[in-house]
Length: 491
Figure 1 (cartoon, rainbow, N blue to C red):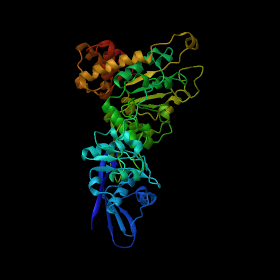
Figure 2 (cartoon, rainbow, N blue to C red):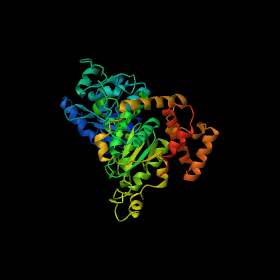
Figure 3 (cartoon, one colour):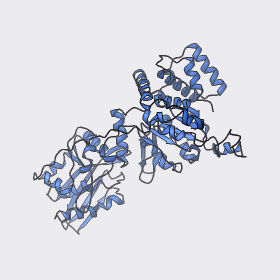
Figure 4 (cartoon, rainbow, N blue to C red):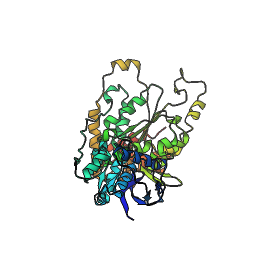
């Protein structure tokens, strides 16, 4: 009584977990049983596999077919088990040689006519196959995506019959090729923003150091407009960052055209988004917005309108760069190294300080509006800046400012300076690695006492000052750098 084996993968977050599909055919009442903590989608693969084989003119033998997904104590989710189950059955029927399948891992969804459809997590599966020293069999539409996972043998058939013909030597599959990359879009240009020099300076500092930022201003002041232009100031992702971000989008099924992501992602969830949508999770744990913004920007407009638990859930990943999701059956960690950009009105009506337009409930209007934003969360935001609306005459008369390309060049130079000095951006450095002259240290101490800054607040103040110094190409933090950084700590 022989047992055929085909390797595939389950996924813990974006990490591949090897799963062996074991198929056994024995005498007895005809049955097709799948065991090994399979969810509904996996158990339904029996009918998809059966229909796919019938479309090829292959009928299942009148035997008891037992499919075991090992290890059996891991919950198996998804439709990517279709293909390895079908290959295991074909091997058990002596249609496919077991020796050939031992060199590959496989994943793919089968349609009723035998076509192999796209699934999530192909890049992670390719990385897992490389660690197992095997090739990978994946859907044809994701062949170029699998190439991103490593230098391994990739088979990307469009159907189960074409894969069978390849293994029997009737028609050899060609190796997939990388998809052509279209020029990335960098978003709207900063030159389209007239005036608002202080706000644009804050945006440049945030881009240069990867700092989180909160913009406060009345409706129509230009907060969302400024945030949308941050993407145009950021450099392209490094190859390592690109692979990390692309893996997340691949596992979430959001990878467009199976091409790598080379620009920092810019995520803008609506303020009605739940905590699960922000952090990730759900019945089938998926990455949330903070993970989809990995190495990119998470823009939260109407900041106080988000649910309080959703806002508080940002505190841990802002510090650690990852999010751990604990469930009764699993404990999954997703990367979440994102740059938080938030925007809000000064109060509920939006016109606090404007004596002609503010409502009659001031200052209670402000207190109720900002109640969801806790002190510990504000303490984790590096830059807090007030956005003043531009005067109507300036909209027409003020000339356009610097283009995004010019500012992006300064941002790039500042980032290169940081990476060459400490291998990290300034938003991550330890305060112990920052040296200060005596006069600068005294100024920081005095200002911290006056503003009652916490230890975290002092650290973030020095990080911003370090970025300001880097933009000015200064080797040390000086008094003007600290003074400018202090303007972004007051609220």
